[in-house]
Length: 236
Image 1 (tube, rainbow, N blue to C red):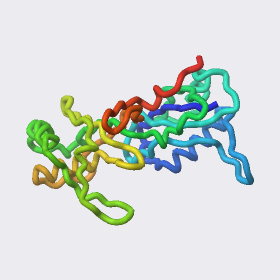
Image 2 (image 1 turned 90 degrees about the vertical axis):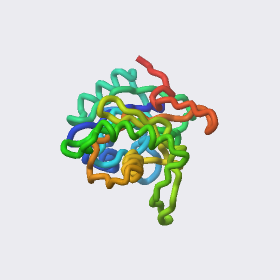
Image 3 (image 1 turned 90 degrees about the horizontal axis):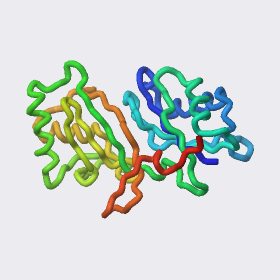
Image 4 (image 1 turned 30 degrees about the vertical axis):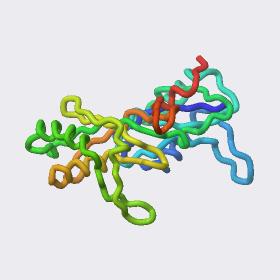
């Protein structure tokens, strides 16, 4: 049985990297006595994969992990088992059952939501003007940045990858392309905005939080973004 688990990551654990998070969940699943399925061969390992690695220092309300289990009572009980052994800062919020043959979360990632707020002392002097300027920034015909790739650096137009950019009070919200193909980090969007204003972005200016991760159930011309957790069903 294939399961998709949604969890949040807050507090000091935000400084733990992706590989260590994977190792943590492997141990937590054993402590919770989850009947997880193991791969075959000389070096069996838990069948587990994560949707999209979260950058070190970022918090999140929308992380996803896929696992396979041999048996379970129901999704609610499994969540309770896991939450009973979670460290402070990690909380299981959803669990859904996937159809047989369903693609893993990593291959489905198409977009992600982020909220950004200024760290203390990092706000621009004219904060109101700074936030209002985001509309003009997004209305440009192109937003060109110099992006580092495995093959070097190249100029890229990131405007098609920004699906939404808005302000709520002093918080910036953005929905951007994510995944293995056109992956856009929120830091790059804000760096491009500072360049647009003729300013340099201060180091560690923002507290960044991922809110949700989406799959695209439509196509590139008619994008239908659905949270990864809604692609399965529950068994309670």
